[in-house]
Image 1 (cartoon, rainbow over the protein chains, first blue to last red):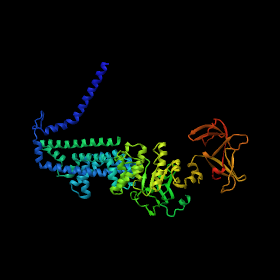
Image 2 (image 1 turned 180 degrees about the vertical axis):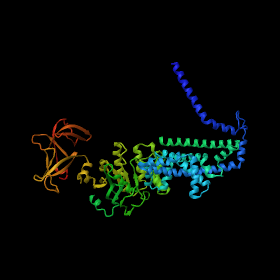
Image 3 (image 1 turned 90 degrees about the horizontal axis):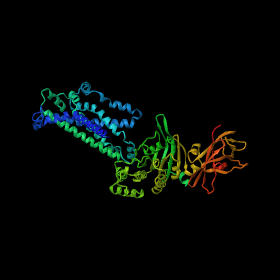
Image 4 (image 1 turned 30 degrees about the vertical axis):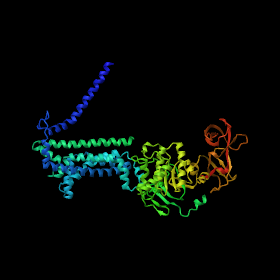
Amino acid sequence: MYAQASNERLTKWLMAAILVAAYGFLYMPIVHILFASLSSRPNFPYPPEFDYGSYIRLYTNTVYQSAFLNSLIIATCTSILSTVLGFLATVGVLRFAGRKALVYAAFFAGPLFVSEILLGISSMSLYYLAFELQGNMVTAIIANSVHCFSFCFLIMAALLYRYDWRMNEAAVVCGASPVRVFFEVMLPLTWSGILSSLIVAFVLSLNGLDISFYLLGATPTMPSVAWGALRYGVKPELYALSSIINILVFAAIIVLYFVARSDRQLSVE
Amino acid sequence: MNASLDGVATPYIRIAGVSRQYGQVRALHDLSIDIAKHEFIAILGPSGSGKSTLLRLIAGLDRPSTGRIFFDGIDVTDLPPYKRGIGMVFQEFLLFPHRTVRENLAFPLRMTNQPQQKILERLDWAEAILSLRGLMDRYPNQLSGGQQQRVALGRGLVTHPTLLLLDEPLANLDRELRNEMEVEIRRYQKQLGIPFVYVTHNQEEALSMSDRVAVINGGRLEALGERQTIYDHPPTPFVARFVGKSTRFDGAYNPATGQIELQHYNYAFPYSGAFERKGDVRAEVFVKNERFQLSPWTAVATGIACTIADIVLRGPFVEYILETEAAERIIAVKPKTSDQAVLGTKLSLSWDPAACHVFPAGR
C-alpha cells in the first residue's frame, strides 16, 4: 500500500517535470529575448544586469517607429477587412449553403494551406499584371486579408455554428429592421466569435513577414525591419522590439481567454 | 354566429390564392382563407402539410410564389415582416437569451419607436395580464417552460399587433400546462379582440381553442369551417380521419337494399346519401369512437360481434378495447358508469346511421 502511494507520488512529480520542460521549451526563447532586451550585455544576459538603454534607443529610432506604425496600420485594416469578409462567408455557409455547406467551407478554408511566401510573391506579380499596382500599403492589406480570411472564417464558423438563426426571425417579426436585428440581437450573441477573429487576424498580420515583404518593397514594417537588421548584426533595439510585440500578443491572448470564458458563462447560465 | 362569420363583407385578414413552390416541391397550393377581426382560427394539419409555410407567408418571413395577402384591406404581400405590425409566438419560444424578461417585452416596443411613457405602460399591462410579477428582471434561462411561454406571448402581444401568429406554441410544454395555457390563450384573444392564427398538428388544441378550423393536407385546404361543423360533419375522408378519434371501415353500397354493407362484418346500415356511380360501389365509413353503441350480445343482435379485450379508465370516460371476430381492435369511448364491465364479455357493436360519415371510395 505504501509502495503504491509512493508510486503515485512519483508519477505526479514526473508529470509535473514534463509539464515544466514543455513550457520551458515553449517559452524560453521568449523569456530570453525579454532578458536580453533589458540587459546591458545583450549577447550573454545572465545573470541579468538591467538596463533600459535599448528601449530608449528604439524610442528614438525613426525607422523602427515608422515600421511599427506601418505594421499597426496593416494589422488593423487587415483584421477588420478579413473579419468582415469572414463573417459574410460564415453567414453564407451556415445559413444559405444547405447540404453543400461543407464543400463551400472547404474552399473558404483552402488558402490556409497556401504558404505565405507563395501568396506574397504571387499577389505581387498578379496585382502588378492586372492593375499595374506597385506594392504599397493597400496591396499589402489586401494580400494579408487573403491569408487571414481563412482563419477568420474558421474561427467564426466554429463559434457561430451554435447560433440559432431563428433569433433573427423572432426579432424581425417584433418590428426590427435587418440593421437593428444585427446590432440588437446578432452582435450581442456572437461578439465573442467576431472579437476572436479580429484579434487573431491582427496578430497574424502584425507578425507576418513574407506577404508584406514582397508587396511593400521599401516601406518598412516591423518584421521586415527586424529581418533586415539581422543582416547587419543584431542590435539590442531588435530585442526590445521583439519583446514589445510579444507583450502585445500576450495581451491579445489574455483578452481572448476572458472572451471565451464570458461566452461560456452566457451559454451555461 | 355562423352567419356573421360567413357573411364578412371585407375580411380583416385575406389570404387570396396563395401558393408557395420550393424548386419542384409545392408546399402550398392555391390557398384562400378570410379571417374576421375577432376570430381565433386554427390551422390544423400533419407535419409537412404546409401549415407552417402558410404562417411564414402571413408573417412575411417567406414570400408566396403567387397570390396576395391583405391586412385590413391593404396589400402586405411585398412588405417585410418588420413593417407588418404583427406579433408571433414560436414553438421554441426564441426569447433573447442576453436580455431580461423586461427587456424582451420592451424589445418590440423599442423597435417600433414607441415613446418611453408608452413602453412603461405596456410593460405594466403585460406584467399584469400574463402574471409575470417578480419575473421581470430574470433572464430567460432562469424561467420554467410555462413562464418562458408567457413571456413569448407577452412579446407577441405587447405592441397590440394587427394579428397574432402562433406556431405550435404549446408543443414543448407538458400536458397539464398545455391544458392550462389553452384556456389562457383563448382568454387573451377574446380580451384583445384581434385575430389569432394558431398553427398546430394537435387536433385537440385546435378544437379546444379556436372558433374556426382550417384543415390543411398536402399544401391544400381540405376543410374550413366552424370547429363543431368540422368535427361533426367532416367533408373529406382525410378530415374524418384526422379530426377527432375515429375508426375506419371498408364497405360497399348496395343499391338494391339502400344499405351500406361492411366488408369484413355481417353488419349493414341504411344510407340515404348519393353515390355518383350506380351499382355496387365501395365506400369508406368513419365512426367517431364515442358514437359507438354497445349492447349485450343476443342471438338476434344485428351489430358487429366483439368481446371486451381491455378497459382503459380516462377519468370521466372509459375506453373499451374491443376485439372483433376479424381479430381487429376497435376502441369505443363511453362515459364512466358505476356498473363494472367484465373482460371477455361478448357485445354487439353498432351505430346510428346518421352519426357516421360515408365517403365513396371509387369502384
